[in-house]
Amino acid sequence: MIPKLGKVQRVDVRSAWMNEASHFTPWLASEEGMELLQDTLGMELEVEATEKFVGPFKADILAKRTDTTDDHWVLIENQLERTDHRHLGQLLTYAAGLDAVTIVWVAESFAEEHRAALDWLNDVTGEGLEFFGLEIELWQIEGSPPAPMFNLVAQPNEWTKEVKQQASDGTLSETQKLQKRYWRAVRELLLERNSRVRPGKAQAQSWVTYALGKKDTWLGSCVNTRENRVWVEFCCYGPPGKVWFDQLAEKKDQIESELGYSLDWRRMDTKKMSKVLYALDPADPTDESDWKRQHAWMADHLERFHRIFQPYVLELSDEGPAGDD
Image 1 (cartoon, helix red, strand yellow):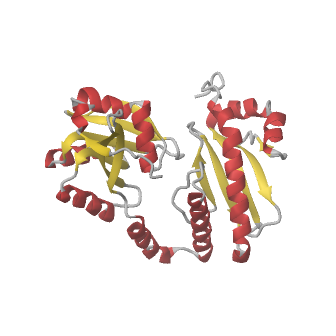
Image 2 (cartoon, rainbow, N blue to C red):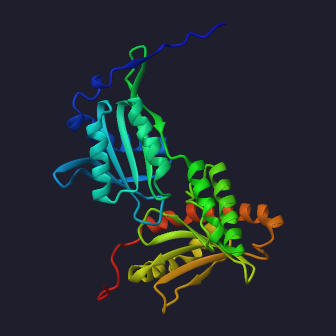
């Protein structure tokens, strides 16, 4: 028996959002709109402001990535029509004025010259800048409520930027080259797993950090090629970090019970950073034949740290110790 199937039809976006500023921008900045945008872009976002003034102009939405450990700003410019030169110019003006590092242009449809402009910008800019082009569509099935969908038409060319980065790797030491290969493999594994632990670009250094959604807290994965050590860690920074460490230490038994193993708790009173570690022993990060085991262990425990620590971290008080700057 052949099942009866509905017919999918495209709907005019103006049927849901009559006005760009009054209807579409508020929807895009809402929980529903941002959830769809996050799924499309593969990043976690938190709206900081709408109609943000940049000189005499207003940017539609300013957001911050919460899956990175630095202040990574995202500028979102939208229009319920075909792209035009005016919006492209505004978008670049806003980006310069806000020091935005990820630029998202949402439109009903993209002119070929504007799609090409975003591709060109992704090719010529450095690793710290990203440009995305998204077309907004509405679809329904036989009179059902219309469902929004983003169509990704322009995005950073990771291969091109990777080639550029590799061209500059000739100045790296052998240890730095090994570190970069190590973290590139860890990143690929996390992406393959579609992990909640969001990996950044591989760098020639002994550590990588991963955001937890609260400023001055993060997860880390680390190697020490001289001492043959590999570990994962939770870190908190600054005067509030000491308070947060103490709050978490009060729940040490509960946290370790949920993790299933004991941790190395280091308050480090003479340092600005406090951390909680778990190490793989033995582990030689220079032994590439053992990388598969090390990377699987690292991914497993980063994901476990993220699952267990994040709820505790998000409940921490933002108040630092009295009298501290």
